[in-house]
Length: 245
Image (cartoon, rainbow, N blue to C red; front, top):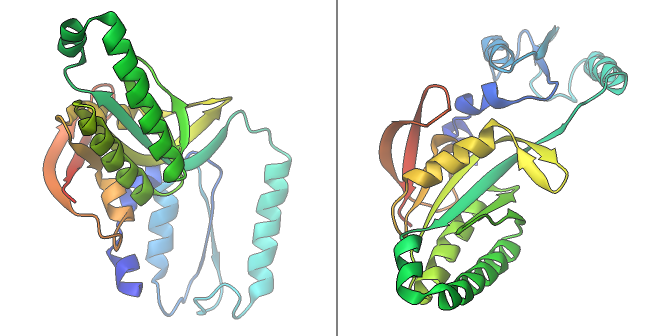
């Protein structure tokens, strides 16, 4: 377990954290150097960083009262501030039917509508089965969110498998980041990234960001390097992966 945790790289996720964050680190921590705490705090926008005296790594060891006091002050300030939108960490899953225009023209409106409705029904069943939340279906696509990245990827694979039974091919993309809860909908940069990742996938392919890959270490999922890509409207180049199994 410890090796898996040390192999998980979440550095790319830190700048995407948009909630108020408190980072505590003891200056003489015997396990994790204090520089790591400083780095994490420096990467999270607006994070408060506090160094505590002592060398104990576990938060309940040593001078735990000082640690609790800092947390108490931080929470008191949060209660006194107004949060405009609720933000949560989630994995977004986008799917889209490949070649839908040509297929619709070949089948005709009535047959195509019936086929799409059946595909959506099966896709929503898979979202429920993997404990996700169905958010929206627009056109031939679907958006769902999950609190576990591995379940999001496996749901994407299952949606693709059920679509093939209907003679359809689905592309899918997954990304983990902070999203804004907007009533029944969701928003934020992470949602846009997930949509862009899905758009790059081919028929019956599931693509994922490096964040998803790193957070699913030990899940048994296998990823193939798909290289770096520029995502339309999103800063920087993103390292993406194709899910192979």
